[in-house]
Amino acid sequence: MAKYILKRFLWMIPILLCVIIVVFTVMYFTPGDPAMAILGNSYTPESYEAKVRELGLDKPYIVQLGNYLINIVTKFDFGKSYMNNRSVTTQILERLQPTLIIGAVSVLLSQLIAIPVGITAATHHGKIQDYTVSSLCIILAAIPGFLLAVFLMLLFCLKLNWLPAAGITNWYGYILPIVCSIFGPLVSSCRMTRSSMLEVIRKDYIRTARAKGVSEHDVIHKHALKNALIPVLTMLGMHLGGAMGGSILVETIFTVPGLGILMKNAIYNLDYPVVEGCVIFVSFIMSLLMLLTDLAYAAVDPRVRDQITGGGKKKRRKKAAQSMEGIAA
Image (cartoon, rainbow, N blue to C red; front, side):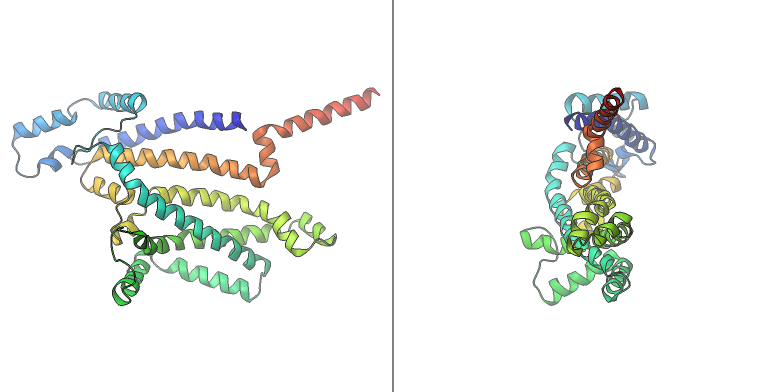
């Protein structure tokens, strides 16, 4: 297992290098002039040229890319913001907490609801429970996120005056952003759990377990659930990765100072170092989450665990050795 984890970490190095090069190249060739965005309309040719030299934008592309890579690899330095001259790393860490709390809690709650509901729909296929779950998923998927956020704000903030309408001054401020962030992962995971469970419970080994008199509870939770959870775990990793990048819609509506707002403002202001730093940071988090997803596969499926640890090869060698001993005897 340790060897597998180390190999995956080493594979992250070329992946992140490719991400850095692609993001920097896209930002370099993106239309727009950061120096002009900083100076505004009241600038002289001398002040413009001085600002370009200060930002290092007068150097060739390959020189800028090389300096950027060297600073990241040797110093873990993503540079400084064009707008406020603050460290990009510091700004990302300052905005990380609200995004992390909203993303992690919303995804966790959505899975705690979606998986049991999806299992119930699958085990009652063609019945009222299944139709109810499917109908609710279609309705929730059809509601635009911004409309739901505005409706909840009007109801709980302006009408009932129970929750704050904007900002994160205390834990109450997290409630509405979390609720609005739940529905996307909830609907997709519920539908995935239902379809995956339906496929698994029709397998031959499930019929065999039922024929042997195994209780329905054990059939579902001990035999079918582990195999059905594998595609759900894949989707869970994707949801967590997306949540760590911050939801621009939710953070904008509820004025949450998270990564999504930081990235949106940086794009609007042509603040390339901040945009690049946010994308690289989110890519690193996504790579870690994909590694954790693979390890979760191993926890629920012994076949995956054997592939990771090499247990399957050991068993085949042992079986081959026993066969040779039998032939020799």
